[in-house]
Image (tube, rainbow, N blue to C red; front, side):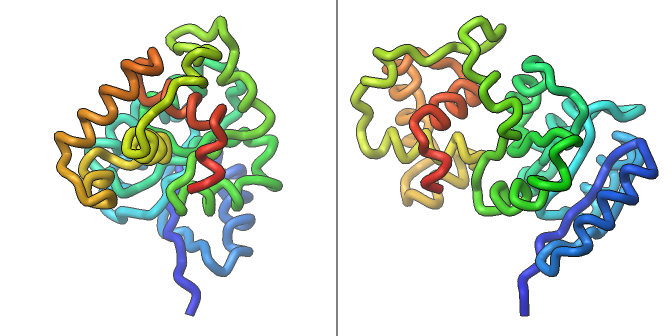
Length: 219
């Protein structure tokens, strides 16, 4: 029997929501367990259903998708968030990654890449729509530290690399500690040392660095 990935959909456009449901129902390994048309409705539904993946729009009434993602990162850490949106601006992508979103797909790309994106983040990956992925590396990007050539040449220890890879994939410190068989404080130490060596500041920077390194393709 195929193990199904449970999904909740959240978008304030009923027609788009219906089309999305139809698209996903074609896949035998995906199951839509609930739908919401407002951010607060999505928060309640996701908290109740605890799906594997929540597919949400940024622009929703009562609670926008970015704020919803921040809430869910604390309230439902096991649910992976995939942002499906019209917004192509770099600022939205940055905010989404900083809020803990693991997937970012443009609505215009949904028919071709949404299903692969869902499967990628379920297997502990990060997925950014190829149409805008390059914008993550704009050196003028506000709020991000651009990895320098010197940073890319820095020698990290094996454990530091393991920790950064798992952080980029969206795992919490506790999950990383469990996977690597070390303490949470050790995870924090390896992370701090690596960030200091690389001159990076936060998780979004780590994701950018991991993509440059090709690490996310290895997970």
